[in-house]
Amino acid sequence: MGTNRHMSVDSRGRYTPEASGEVMPGSEGPTGSRSHNLLSTRRASLMQEPVLVLNATYEPINVTAVRRAMVLMLKGVAQAEEMHNTEVHSAAHAHKVPSVIRLLAYRHIPQQSRALSRKNILLRDRNTCQFCVRVFPSSELTLDHVVPRSRGGRSTWENLVACCYRCNNRKGAARATGRRKRRGLSWRENPGRLPCTPPGS
Picture (tube, rainbow, N blue to C red):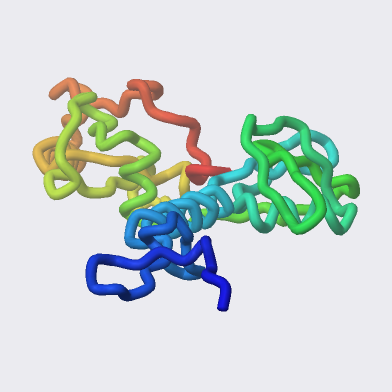
């Protein structure tokens, strides 16, 4: 009977594939498993990287993930304008990862209006009192009607401004006594505030 010259035995006469340098399937050990998991994590993270989406007119309209951007490109809906240096691999192809894509057909994006609220008014005015031009925490500011509601003033973006409590009280007292101009209280037309339009419009 011949002896298998590739067979190795340990000191007790047992066959040991490791002693002969053979590697059994699935026996890569914890190091190989960690490498595989790390590679999978990196690939998943890459597919979630942000990609800027431009309209056909090159206007930015959205931010999406690499996975969604590549689906749009493969469907012929969009094309890449800028690319990363990295690639993703399928069974037969390697694809460069986009960082900016552009839609091939123009998409009408409806204008979104912001709600008229205390928070958005303070955001527009940068937490700055529009009378004394001082910056305050939100908790120390209120809203003031430039044209008082008693005189027909409406609650609109143009007629509402941020105002500190001190100036609001002074304005109320001055209005009651008719001495507003003499006391030097006046609304600053442009104390560093944004145009009277909804933020983000």
